[in-house]
Length: 220
Image (cartoon, rainbow, N blue to C red; front, side, top):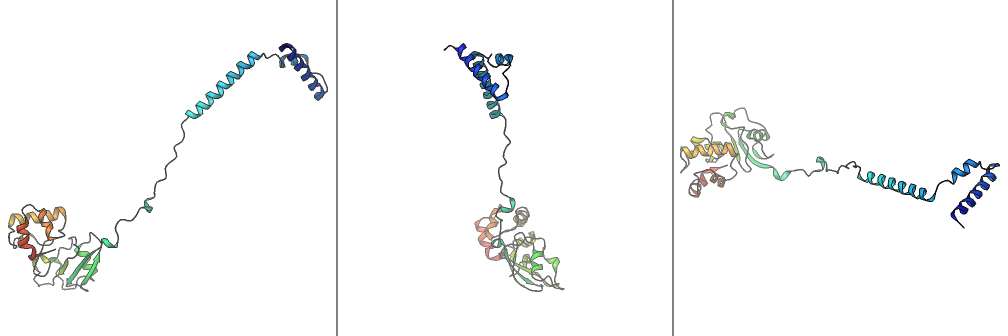
């Protein structure tokens, strides 16, 4: 059977189906139009449709996608820095309401130590104490009374307090002259309080020999 006869047979079958469904025969023009598409034209149309579909798929794949933000940990979830182990302990004595040992936060000042000890008494000579100085762990804070001669460097125990003594008081130490005493004061103001006698070696001019001579004569 030829292609032409096949198309005619299909057309007749379609016409009979239409007539059975609608009760009237298929109009002649519609029959001709329905089966006027040639196989080559149908193949060409299929190729065009395939190309359009492929182009649409590629265009969709190339289109930018909205970036999905990555989850970042909340600052509230970050571990807390510092804790009870970071606190410093000082011994407050002299003209205060409650002398004794007190724990303070890092960076606390002498004024905080006096306040922790219940505050200064009425006869306390606060002018003899550097209330703005940062405390050092393990130090003794002495608050003298009015008319009472403060210990050298206001540190107590008859020793020179490295973190409270002025240049003149530092000069009383063996091996410490005016120039070196001034260097110690300047270093203390620039780098913060000394936390041990060995910290003095960061000052130019203070070597092992000087350190050994003054070790038992100073305190923090």
